[in-house]
Length: 281
Image (cartoon, rainbow, N blue to C red; front, side, top):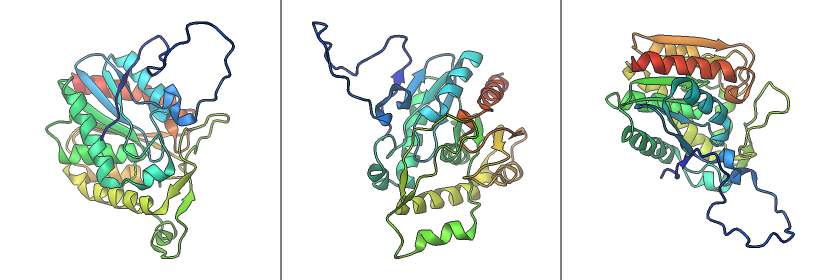
């Protein structure tokens, strides 16, 4: 199920916690990264053009928040960034979910935004891009355009796949987050990943790759030249597999995998805003 969407509001909210009546000295408790406001799902209300923006595998809306806000400001579109099932909690919580749960989260978010907007464009980073392509292929009547940022469609090296099926393999492997060129920028994400969950991602990305020829909507593909998580060859594969009459492929020269937090984040927001305007007209 999809998590609640928080409206963007100027004041700080305390999640229904009581506010002390007197200003007595209080001991401050650090906020866990996944409880930070920037890691929560959010909705920016705007026009009847909606942009559904998914975060990546093991991550949270924090990874796409800045780009989402820039897109909203530049285009006036309604922008919704949900939280996918199993994310924003713990690696163990992720291990309780699989590709069917992530797809269900995406579909629920699409229904939420479709109820508000006359037209919807879907997009995302990494696994979020995979989900966007998957939805666009299967639900063309509900989606008018799709944006892929470093999306995966099933191109893996053998040495990456083989360990997933090692019967004696470790239960968890090291995380893949924060692949960012800009120093000092960090992605809020899991530091380890259940190995069984990686199998689920493998199934989803390969299935989505097979669905690409069903995509007829306008497509915007943004791909980092250097991506240490997803093979950059996914970008030309998407461009040559879809049957869309409008295909835009833009190479990101300064960013790694989490490009929405990297040097090219402003360029990404600019290109998405332009794409939304062209689809809406």
